View (cartoon, rainbow, N blue to C red):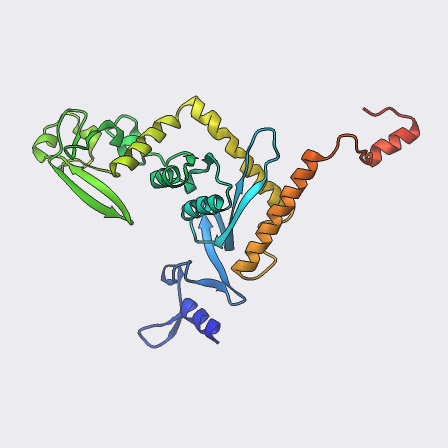
Length: 311
């Protein structure tokens, strides 16, 4: 009865005129609170780029040692709306507990922020490698404007210096979406007459301001954005493509995207068993004695019987 009551609350509401109304998309509860089926209250709706589904997310961590089989060493299952970056710290904690922490962990952008890089190095001595999100400001996209990287930060005096040499006049701490930023604001007397104003800000009257992360995170962000443009960094990162092949293998063979059970706990067991099956298959392929005879393909047997040579 409680599940039925929640379904009604999620999908319907009493309108002001006293009529029962169907909730439209924007009026529905958040996907993390709303289950899509009374038969599985752990299954939630999610959209990632152009893919929509109702269910769960699985996160595989795979070894990538050279000359050794690539095995999955960690499996995490969450409800679908949980974002990838929320799992990074848990994965590192779990790997460390099991004495499987890597010296270098290669991930995609969704698992990576400057804070993740800093914590992985400080807490677990793990080098977290992956592309930091690019600066999406108008100036950075234009390629000719004064983006954040063009400003020099004087941390000691809590000031920012613009490319034209002007110094900020205020330094305040902001909290944006749970993250701490430091905002440097420039004086109107410096910004208004500046000949490069059009390259710096789109506002016709307000002065420029720059929000940066605290110093350790800002330096990680700037350094990584420069490094990931180099050929050496791209060669190091190229090995991450292997996990995409692993996901494809487990989607196509054991049907990873289809949950055979109801509930988060049981679905996690399925994901663990899927990873184990993949590991056993890879170990068998790697360590199978070369002298063991394999059954010849039927076509080859037919050709041999008929007296044809097949190479």
